[in-house]
Amino acid sequence: MEFLFLMTPQRPLLPRRWLNLQEYQSKKLMQESGVAVQRFYVADTASEALEAAKRLNAKEIVLKAQILAGGRGKGVFDSGLKGGVHLTKDPAVVGELANKMLGFNLTTKQTPKEGVKVKTVMVAEALDITRETYFAILMDRSCNGPVMVGSPQGGMDIEEVAASTPELIFKEAIDIFEGVRDDQALRMAANLGFKGALQRQAADQIKRLYDLFLKVDATQVEVNPLGETPEGQVVCFDAKINFDDNAEFRQKSVFAMDDMTEADPTEMAAAKWDLKYIGLDGNIACFVNGAGLAMATCDIIDLHGGKPANFLDLGGGVKEKQVYEAFKLLTADPKVEAILVNIFGGIVNCAIIANGITKACRELELKVPLVVRLEGKTLNQTASFLLGTSSLQRKNFMLMSI
Image (cartoon, rainbow, N blue to C red; front, side, top):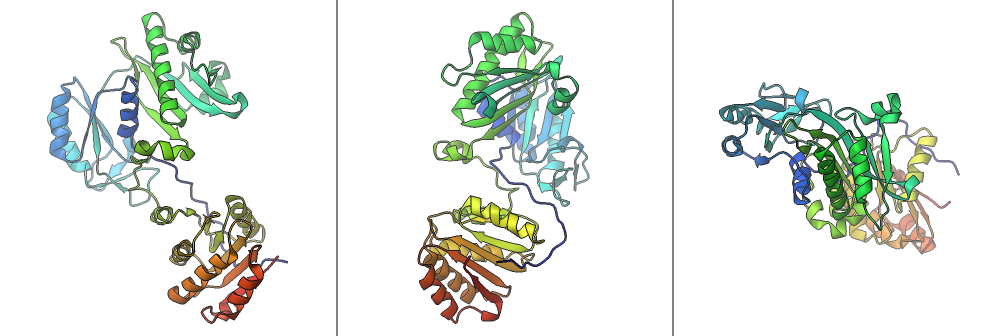
């Protein structure tokens, strides 16, 4: 059987959103594991920022707007202030700058056109960096576990380093049962270019970063740069932490820090009903159970010249209320010109889906064409129910069994 779909111009897909932490939150997790970071405070008002700057009592202070997008340093505020990152030696200036940051939108190359409202700033001690290195711990399929990756060329795109000077990329596989051995940590520190007492200090930081990696169920901890200061300190100046979403049940405190202010509101609404939803830029809404079938459905739509408006996985334990709420999300999208329901009844009762669909069609006054494909448990009874119901607008409805 062939599928007929509405056409739409080619549009880029939107990226999947994972757990996002602000910079100060990642640094807080590092502090808790004994990793050396700059001293810092967080402020929500200009007066708090000024007080924090005074408390730091540092030679130089760095003020950073806290948003999830990159390119903050070259961003522009709608207050007229240029740059979301500022250095100063005068604490009084921190208050003035924070006053032009907090409550205003910051636009960077990674934000929407209108920018993102800044609600928090980080006031930190600015440290000079004598030398920058790169260090990361990540899960690697080829190593069947975690691996350390390091380079003496830090503070720049590691992909560029790997492409131009691959001999400056060093790897050490970590035995998941042993952890990072002393000789491994010291060897990596030496490969990063640390010498003398700094080598031992860097090795200690490497072991602490691995402890953090395990403690928070991370899939990656990337420090760029892992720097050396003129005073002889090894400091993690910036870090990116990726988390295993499957570990949310045991990392509740970490996931509770998730900053949702920049998240897609539809994805947030879907998560409340335990629906796996990702917004795309097409015009054919997908209503599917099972992640594999959902991906295959998106592929089929694309194969036949259409474009999916979303990825939606109902899962196997879906209830009628979730079906109804899913339809609410789909019909609220102005791009949607048709809805394709593709249900495998092996993991869900088709009758549950049918009841949810009819309730949604009746109460939401469905205006777009609806194509329903059901296969499996209670299919025959469900098909008769759907075809016989008066709540569906028959001219907009098609039922298929493949």
